[in-house]
Image (cartoon, rainbow, N blue to C red; front, side, top):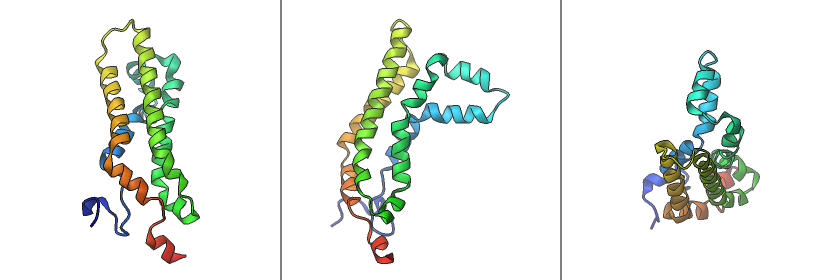
Length: 162
């Protein structure tokens, strides 16, 4: 009996990452995505930077705290490549990197709020709640635990090709 519904498996029987994880990672990488989008619009980029990044002196720090999430995306995206090479230990980095990234984002949000005199900011509050939810979901998800356990060994199709 399968521990998850059939829709959570690919054609080789490997557990797929939960869809909510991709959405949460995209939200967590929002600063990096915004910088990439603003770079593509050079005529309006300066105005957009002032609107979305009022603390431009710490923009590099905002980008840096998204790197753990970006690394998780890269690891999950290249899992087939890692399996072909026989690497499986990388899967153990997913939970710690998500937790580290969430904690770093929360610390950065705290510094922004302190800089603003602890005034209410709906955007930063929503981001803080999302980061707390991401930490909770990553560390308590049954689906993610089964996925990481399933990823201990490369799928059967990879072993058959060699």
